[in-house]
Length: 256
Image (cartoon, rainbow, N blue to C red; front, side, top):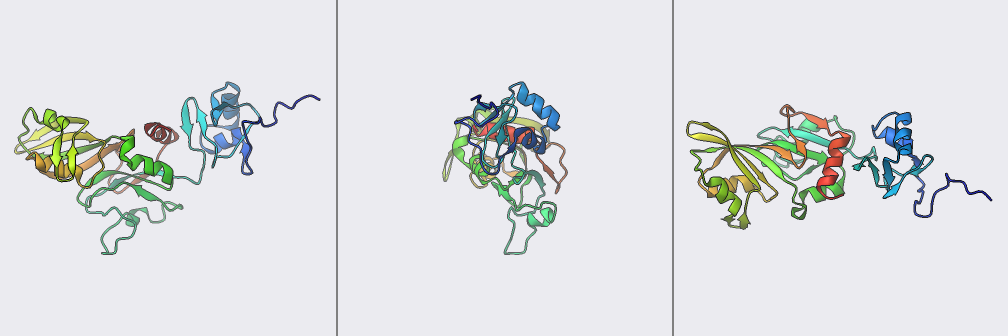
């Protein structure tokens, strides 16, 4: 009896919600079904670590699909959003004190319920990620994954030449030492200066406490990137969905 090459292999279980792989790829925005068939034919797609073949099926909610070495989030129920949080907005979906909150900006723009990845204090602004992918959100926030975050801070000047070395060596705070992964002076404006700091720390008010400890308190703080995701020219108070490439880059940043 001739074996049907299209039948699922023992190491490639087909779940109840599985669909033709090219359909799953197309729905995730990879390209047309014909283009996705070509990717599969050229062995550029794997499912759960196995090179895919034409006729294979996949469940976007359960299978790990990789295209050209980058993990694809094919589950259309999951959303990934970047927001430029304005100053004065609290990082919560329901503030019991009646202050301006994230929900005031999201409103009906997203059908799915999303959660913020980490926080920005009310006086800080800039990049905030929102998603309903709890697993990825947890990894992005957990210090063991060391996802870098970059901030632009306006601080009291002048800035001594050795400040960068001091911050990189580590500064002792009340809840333990902290050190930056990167530091540079961007501009000097009279008695103030703009500096850029990169850290993988996520403790509360960490940048403000760090700069105050070294004698350069922060008057304005903007987060400009989280891992591979950049704030760019996203306007204050606006949201945008992350591209497939950006989501793949986030998975790569946490080792998935």
